[in-house]
Length: 187
Image (cartoon, rainbow, N blue to C red; front, side, top):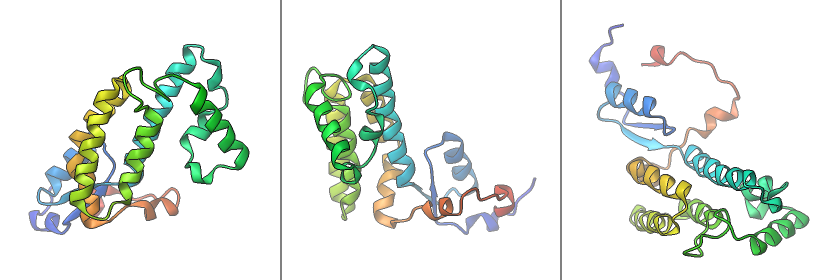
């Protein structure tokens, strides 16, 4: 399929998830476009990492992990009192990668909550310093999944940081449910 070059220069900013295929496609189709990684997808990546750590530790027969997944992944401000009490009890008793690293008190749950708070920053320069410090904390934690996550964040940091300049998201697309469209027709 042949496309006119001039029709592909209409977009200056593209909001997307962290998919390597999407990144490569946008870089080819819109070489001058700024890629902004959608906040929702970045946070989802972090929640998936936390859940993977929890699953790994649950497989290692840690009984305290029964029925705690929802509490770990939900925003603590939105938990009901009994849910908050269960989460607090779990966090104070457990000594695992999910809750505490052997070398530092920078456990996965806290690191991921900390990263999410980074989205509250208003100035890109401040958030840049914050995310670099966050990456260092992940590296110091020595939790394998957090080391991998820190590398992924570092790799995608330019697109994550672009969010703080443009403040755009593709969240409105998800409001409409299963939106069907043909991407090549849009290009």
